[in-house]
Image 1 (cartoon, rainbow, N blue to C red):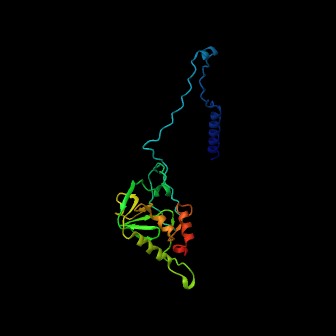
Image 2: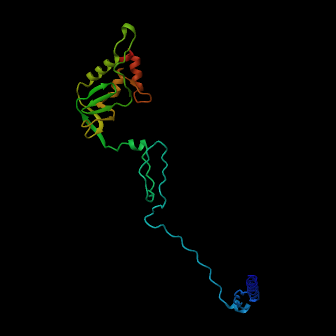
Image 3: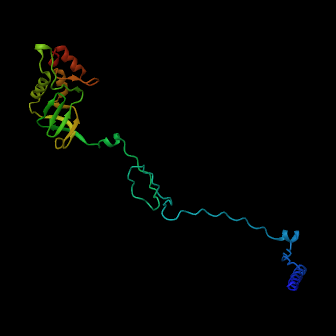
Length: 232
């Protein structure tokens, strides 16, 4: 038994000695690089600088690649989801201002003889469906009452009655469109009856006041002086 153990130890020692005596593996040597001389390096052409890469144009029809982002607040139903690219629309043309939108088109007018005018009040005459507003006159309301106490009288209604009696369904001449009276419209125009200015007659007889800065200031002064109509 002891002999066998000694033999095993001897074999192990011999194997260790052999391993120690074997040469260690060498690392592969790097091949030597050939360095060109200064003359050879100067003879080589200089490398051309790289040209900058051109910017790539967006593909497609100008669609932005970004996707829509849901910004709907909590508690509000969001709209349909969009999974495609966003389309950039051109800017919207500005809306016309209210003044431009309400500006009427130029309508040709001329002096026309109008039949059977009806006085709505002392400043408006009706012919068919059209209305003529007499310029330079401050309209007298129909409910206007003149005087005080027991001497008060309905001068607004009386003024319209006097104007209707003056017109008596006769024809007046005004500057209006050719088809005036066929549609609902209001035209401002001075009118004459047998050559007399209708507006001047109304103010001169005291059945309306002259508009400030209008052409009938002298007519109103005459009516006040003579105590006609509403100035009595």
